[in-house]
Length: 471
Image 1 (cartoon, rainbow, N blue to C red):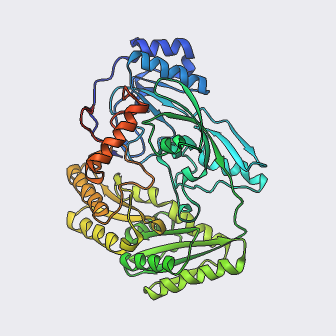
Image 2 (cartoon, rainbow, N blue to C red; image 1 turned 180 degrees about the horizontal axis):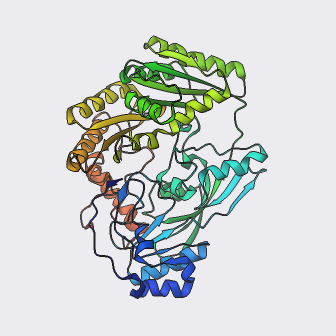
Image 3 (cartoon, rainbow, N blue to C red; image 1 turned 60 degrees about the vertical axis):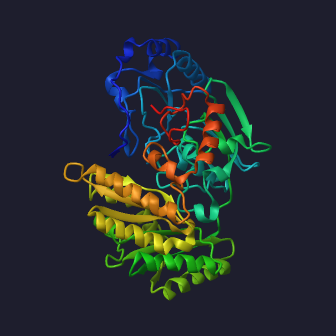
């Protein structure tokens, strides 16, 4: 995991801190962690190391969250919400001594098949929603790569996507209502009419409020799915095929790409028969309720791939299709075998410039001497360039410099810094370049309105603005 470089402070002896003592007394020792070893486990997420929290609360109800927030506010202690810590931007890693509220025990889930809704507390695992909905003939489409471990609360905090986001949308598109606790510990229930405050909270990374529960829209799964893989000589050719397929009218359910480094890492890890010699590989699903339409859409993609020099192979069976998608979901563990640490970028660019962007990033990686791999949800322009490195032998400053250059590529081509991983602390320094001063001041006005004391997840998302000192 890479270091977020927070402003670390010495950790207070928590058992003797008044807040830790009060929370233990009021919630019970089984809901409050105070030992140094236990607290240290809550100082990082999947990619960033932060500051050891003052103490950790494991709420089992919304009432527990309200109590903890009010106690922390009275003590003047910042608050950091946390799900499964699978995030990739440092969003759940405290930047200063704080109270961490970990939602992993809030796992109540119910399905209303008539309304086609799920009601899920923040700690519900993403995959559990679809598993609970399946007996009713329903499904929850958002499918981030970490869907077996990530939580609904974390997905909402980052507005997570996944391979199906191009056709079916991201987490926020499935929210009908939210329950959240504000910075003062007051409880609110939101729907998505009039002012869409729920939409404001989604993707805010716990900096505007702590989401405790959500009402989620469910849908019926497509009756038919067809899968193909296409290999190309270069990432530029693959990007051109994507743009051509979409321009021709294709709207695949999944449209993913991996470069040669990803393909070879996965082959070393799983041995599933991916083409090692390819410069890039596309994985595509088309789906729907009419088989003829599904087949026709697959043919559109197939023709676009072949016109860009791609070699196409259709999955002959469901098992073969499942193996290909297992390969895509295995990118992260496969890359971990190459270098012990990585910085995972999450840029989004217009599809019209995909070819230029992936080629520029490839060139930057080659010039830097660092190992750069690219994969992602290329259908909606969401790319995940990863910088792999070993801190024992490679310069971390060079890693951050390259990350800054990659962010610059996205901004220069009219893109944004994040599609689903969030800004967190990892991309904070890039935000001043990505957002103009007037807009940044407007964002700070929203932050001040909902969190006047700036106590919720400080040091995340927004760089310092006029009159605001970052910790």
